[in-house]
Image (cartoon, rainbow, N blue to C red; front, side, top):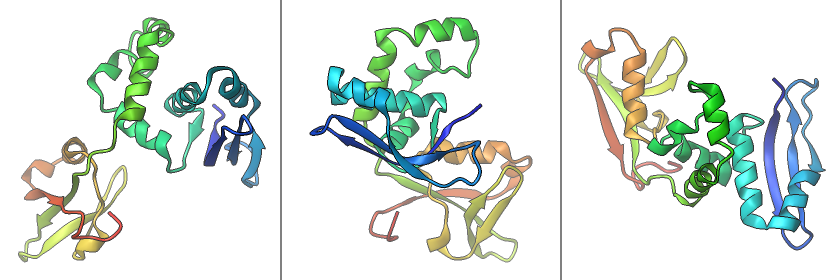
Length: 192
């Protein structure tokens, strides 16, 4: 499946144009370039800014757009944790019914709600004590490994407490580990 690797998206309401900087995943070399997305520009002119925002979020949600750190990727994080999203999640079963539900105004309403919802201010890190009694912090997470660091500033930040529980569930035998989850205050670590 082909998708766009997004670096940035600029919605210029004065000109009525939407510019995307990015690259296609299946073209080598992956040199980002800037282009006007005419379909999104047309939506901007005909339906307004809110409709463009919903269309961009839907492109991220469907996997057509990936990457970047912007309001749409943050809304996607919120969307995937909304309980009402489960009935519209295209990864679920039965696929045909879900596809039909995604065409309803209720799906657009959930996308809009996700765009309007801010990420929670609470941030969490995972810690554990080593056999020597030293406290270490989860630094990096891969599909098969957890990397720990004794330096708190290098700890991986989780925005949702549920994400920390997911990490514990993924690793076999992690129930016996003496894991702890700490909430991080905004002034405790710069850049969090």
